[in-house]
Length: 288
Image 1 (cartoon, rainbow, N blue to C red):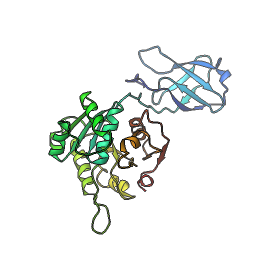
Image 2 (cartoon, helix red, strand yellow):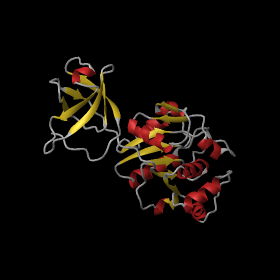
Image 3 (tube, rainbow, N blue to C red):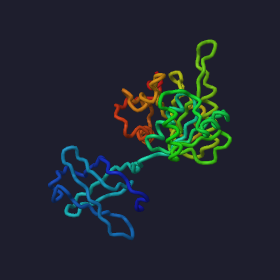
Image 4 (tube, rainbow, N blue to C red):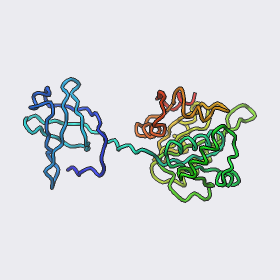
């Protein structure tokens, strides 16, 4: 038994399996009305466009696990559906770590219209940001932060003072100092992830901005995040000192590493409006 959808869904191309080979004209017209076979309490119709070549249909509304019957044909059309939520124009984002990468990311995302919360463990830095004093020098950074703060798109909080959900995407941009043996010290990243686990119940998209060694993401997923509903995505930065703001808005590529389609789409939504090719890969490759 099928319930009506609770929210509108985007038009999506989905695969259809026919009981026997059909061409679109067999359904009476290129646009054929299909009646929901089982939708209790309602007489509803969904309109699909049948494409005979790839045997696909295009739907305006998608449901899961239903059987559709053509209104003018006895052939039953069984469809495999995947629900994809409608994209919003902006996301709620938390940026953990307001060093060089984190401050630029927070400023860039807020300027793009997202609602951003910058979080750090340094109370003095947070106080400086709140008072309009940007402790990091980068051309145009202070101006963007001031404007975004005045518009209410960018706020700052100490880790102990966060009282709201962390949002659709949580960017980890903590420092990763180098150990004496040349390896990367991942303790700041691990501390941030442990804090997120305590602070954010349920689902979340973790976007790793910190510099980490290849293989870190998979290890973190199997250890720190294995008992969570978090999706981990690697999204490294390629910012040049003195040109970081320019590089943020004019990248030559955007590298996104992950294996969950919804999480990848969330990360891509962060960069909506930026004209750059996406390099979609696995987590470890993105870390190289």
